[in-house]
Image (tube, rainbow, N blue to C red):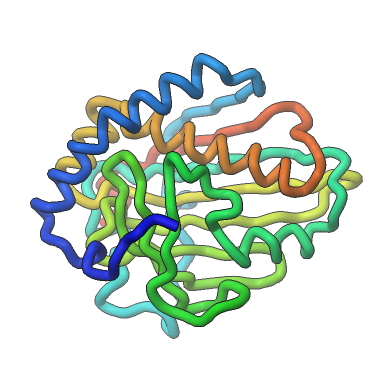
Length: 243
């Protein structure tokens, strides 16, 4: 487990920017290495989105002034859905989801992301739990669990995160396979992130590659294998629609 402390979540904006730039070359090197050795087919769809791509409402019970909503971000909203179909799993959807929710570091690629719980007790993930996530690119920051059930869980970003929005992880049976999905609704949290993500495009690829790794790792945790590669569907929502 990385030696992180709670104060990292409340560092100054300048500190976060400097940290992002220091780690940026490492993130790019990791992405380049992954691309060289990737053999899993990837199906990407990019298109313009609309009002139907806005994120789900935040539950009042877990929403306060610390939550960083999409309206506080910069640039367009990206609504992305990453998906893998898992063939021949050795466990059912509920058992696999319990494994995934019990410890995010089981499926998170340690060279990309380390989760440290900063609020909540031991045991299964629960609503109201908080984590600090350390990433190589400009996305460090805290998240809160705002929804959890037998099929998945959803995070909302908190103040200090370099993204503004929500991300959901879910798993469901699909015939004789399991379907694992990661769905995100997010904007860069500040102008530097906006530059790296939407202008230079490199931050977008670092994040894309990380979630690809998570999809494949969950497939391995199930004891099964990906069928038909992975699919990534991105819908871009213009700023005027975000209010």
